[in-house]
Length: 258
Length: 265
Image 1 (cartoon, each protein chain N blue to C red):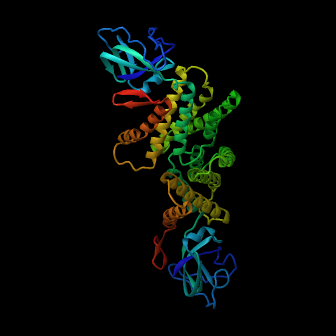
Image 2 (image 1 turned 45 degrees about the vertical axis):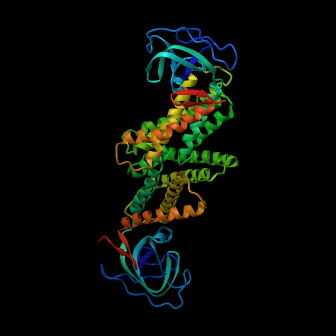
Image 3 (image 1 turned 90 degrees about the horizontal axis):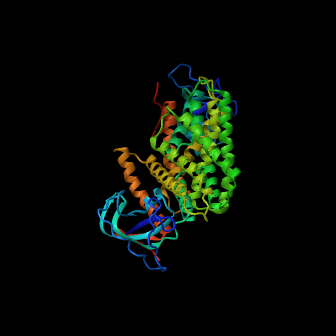
């Protein structure tokens, strides 16, 4: 079963274990020594069954890795008896995370019926690759002010709740978008970079789901409608990230697209 | 055919000063006006208007009026050979204000997100005692946002001119225009008197911008194929009657096959 492993220079960021790296490009590394009584979070070689989890894990080098023998699984985390590194996924870098975050924000903004100029300008700024701390602060402060005054005022008001959710998601997205210009392409991926990217992705999905439901007439449970819309929207975001990483799922395993 | 006539207080025509024969008793029609030969819109004849033209027509006293004989029609304006006033209809600044607020509310509800400053302005419109300083600050902030959007839009237009972008730009522009005029609605204070020309213009603008916002928002969510102007016209034809029905309800009038009638006593 091929899954994902996050390392730092070949070492496990949590335990410091040095994984056997492939000796040659295109060939897998050695199998790790077998361990008995595998258990997630306790014992075994831990791989991730889904790339989504990589946003929450330490480590900046993403590998496609293979596990064999006994295993124990808890959600996306799988502890194997033995494992080996198959191929480094070079596209997992700050540039990819940054571009993906921008793509997510663009998707969300394009779903809205109006232009929120300040947020659109911030997005353009992120795309430009410029980084002027003063200019960026002015822009994010202006967006923050809009949001703060809205929140102060909105309490006790009559709302279409989806309108409110969409607005909240968009302004939260903008807040996170303000960190994107600080993501330096040449630097290794940090936990903060991953957190920003994940938040922008989630905010974007929330904004799209809420905006779509704001115009729909929901007769049944609101959470069921949101869940259902989420299931339509999320795969679009997932497949975009997979495309950017250059990986694809094949049954319960993953492969790198050459 | 029963339509509407707007006169000045006292029954004089605002354009020509012609004194219409007023009903002598409540509930009875006025005398028929003398016959006029060769009627022509804006030239000769007794001019009555449909509800659509009400906010564009001079005058502050609204009457249900009847026309007969030869007629000529141009849009919602009809010139008759003879006409008479049937019944005065309560037409106040307060009614226009509440209609303008309804239009803005309906347009804002159509959007899938809140536009905070414009929502705040709308709230001011519903308050009797508004904080003038705050209202001015808010109106200024909306204008600033509109200016920022306009320059952004101009710059954006160089980069992308897809129909989808144009529709979003159309909606955004009209929501800001609506916001800009909304501050004037908030200032309409004396509500029991007949509306003046400015108040009618403000209400007409709000009506127009609200319809535009709804047309653009619906189309931008629908991704129409084919000619966008045709799609907009078709959508406008669907939305406009809802707005006019609301105005009619507030005036207490109902459309009949042959013109209008008062539905509220």
